[in-house]
Length: 113
Length: 110
Image 1 (cartoon, rainbow over the protein chains, first blue to last red):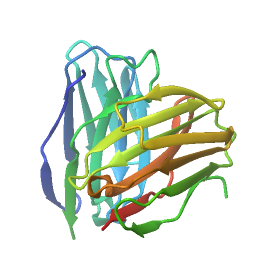
Image 2 (cartoon, rainbow over the protein chains, first blue to last red; image 1 turned 120 degrees about the vertical axis):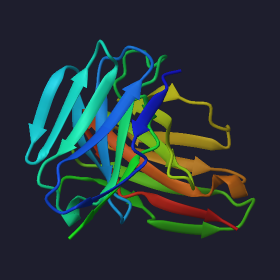
Image 3 (cartoon, each protein chain N blue to C red; image 1 turned 180 degrees about the vertical axis):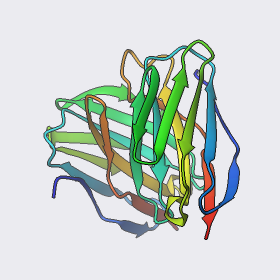
């Protein structure tokens, strides 16, 4: 089983701050996902990455395969970024599927105006 | 709109009943999934179908039976509902690096 640990569990920031959410996993993987779950419940896939770094707008995701660690950064945070951010990796017996996922418990981010 | 849709959005039912949740995607994706999010907001995969064939079947009670009539649909039928089945069920579909989730179905078993 691939264990996924996220930190912090809860994060409160002021608008404009730089945010970092961390994810560590226990078994080597082919790809890692970052998801965003809005307060209303909808889930959006932000990134799937297997190496290096990806950027989309104010969101940046990095992964270090050797250290089994990924970070999600949000620059110039805004109240609309308030959501739960979830890291997910393929399960150990995923048979090559990038979507038989083991999920972290999520990080609840609150950005205050 | 291209999307993954689920019906119903809310489902309240009595213990012991049988119910279905429907999922449709109009994205042309080959692979569809059911995920369960429990009361602690923890997500877990239940099933995955690729081109109408079951490829992932996690340790889920056999009261849960997925059915894929075609590539665009993956329905979830649940027999003899139990209190512990109360959760939010998310359908999703994928193609390459793209993974899209449906809006979720909140199932409450009384």
